[in-house]
Image (cartoon, rainbow, N blue to C red; front, side, top):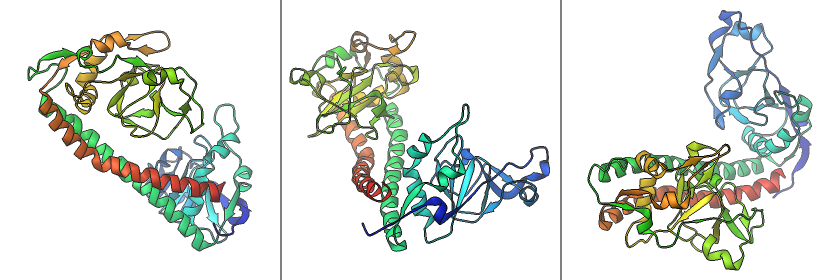
Length: 389
């Protein structure tokens, strides 16, 4: 990276506060000026607000109108949350606007602040509502390269974010289509209206149901990637939070994952998340799973893992799966005996395979974009570490 100037937020920006117009004056509200609070900082860019105020409200309160492209950061409640106001806005007292005094582009400033959220959170104080002082924000150190280098950095970071956004949009589309396609093709698993022959999962297993390792995971990337309940999100494995375990060679067969294995959340504090599952495709990587996960490895000559995964992610399939689950004072559970007895209507294998091929086509764009996003994000992370520290 080209040479950067070490400076601070206060040296390159004016830090501007906001305020709340008196609620006792209805004429202050319902105007045409977007008035932002923390709840409006939901995306990288802001063009709309949940509330609007009048010019009279600006004149009679501590708030002020900030120009377009102002970087806005939360200093109370959701400390460190950042967005760029793409239209003129006013802000409340929980936010600060950063008005550049020198050559810094808003997008560079916003990306920098996003990487600094953990630092800002560590400096937050308060017994009930935590916040940081203006001084903490002003004294935050920042590396400031040339404007051209800032644009290059922003372009790389923005490209990674856009690929991730497209991947998430493709997955959302697949999540909407696949359950509807399953129900249309095979009926509701809760009632089996098409009369498929009923069978228990125990009759379709290639190896016994098993729980994962109780070894505490760590950050050492030279060991086995540990799939945990937190990694199962919306029917997929999310690699945002990676942790690793060292497996005893004698336990590898029991605690490793292969392509087509289903990982099931079998012990968790939230009933809502009990039974959530995902398909594992480690390829040549070494994946393990922890003790709150159950591994389901089925015989692909009898049942398609993709078809079974889709069934388990329908409301009716989950209802059948968890009908014998239990709850203690601290968590909800389902054990191997209960999962083995999970019964459902099983259509012919060729029908399952046809459905699985459709699922792969539907999900293909999302999976390809995931791979591209992972590559772009790795580059972005390395760049962020180099530039922002």
